[in-house]
Length: 151
Ligand SMILES: [Ca+2]
Image: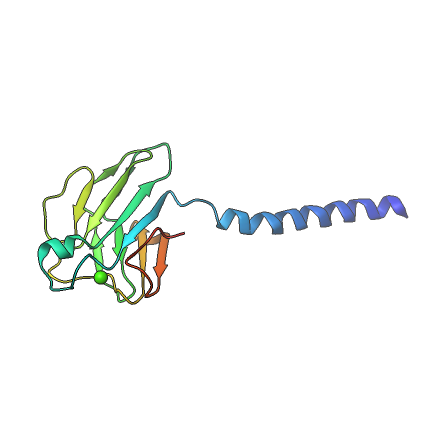
């Protein structure tokens, strides 16, 4: 009788282990993650290009491989979208996406907007990959402070 119960108990333990493992997997570090969003640029929001570029997000490649981000989408809660140009994010490196106008470099991309995108009173930033727009990471904030490190 006891012998029959042992396999059932083992199966139960295996099921429990898989259930416990599932949330840990979901919380795995995103391949590209938000490390900072400076949503309320310094000074009054008058819309000058310097002010627009004081508003930015920083995304980091957390993997040991280069990631080609062409056509990835950065999006706010309202639905404004920045589509990445052909851009390689090297292992462990970060890219800053500034809201205003400027010339792209290996470390900084420009949304080329003429007004702010990230709401000072709370918003949500998301980064999505590929044609199916698979969600990679998000960062949310409220009205407190000027920036968040997305933790
Ligand atoms: Ca803002």
